[in-house]
Image (cartoon, rainbow, N blue to C red; front, top):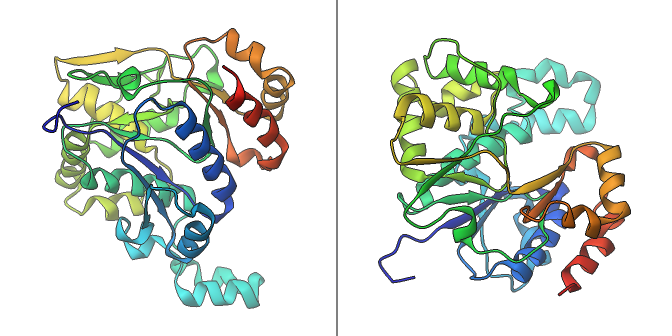
Length: 299
């Protein structure tokens, strides 16, 4: 890679509850990524000290989510105080409750694009992801091509219809098909296209994009990006990929099945470079840490 070649950036939003997952993900990344690259990790300001202490000499860039996300997304100090002292009274200050952490992380992903080289891919690697085999960044986002992962799942539960329909409404588009989604990991986003997406949202709604999304009950950053790229930008050079790079453990059954024999599961899916053990399952990292460590030791 020459000096003038745009450099990809890895980006991870995280928080204290996912610290152990983040440390494990970073360990697998160092083991399997062929060429180290810039990696930005954004966490709430209050969690910065814990992350710095736990990560030690890790060379990723640690920044506060508050540098990317409007302060109104975060709970007001008075709300946090009342929640701690009299949680049954917190509803009285609900207007100052901010937005949930998973919404804040979506805003951080969109905002982080401004920190990256405009024409190089920003590759989002969430904390609950871990890598399982060697790969290069060109395996995810080939040099000179722009990739969009677009899945058409068979199961109804995997279609994310409301997110797709909601993205079209936010983008000012007419209704359309909802048989597909863009939730694949690692996610690939191109910063100049993200900038165009945010400008489009502001043009449609006449408000700053963070204000528009703050008033939206539920949305998906990947659906917004995917629909915008395909139906607004419609770039002729786009390379669509219909298979994700990951396996996903989305419930207790899939989690148990995978870790019963992870080697066999990976042999059946040789094209998958990572696994997502969804953090919302509430399964502690320690329950599968040893199994992942064994995967790290394999040839």
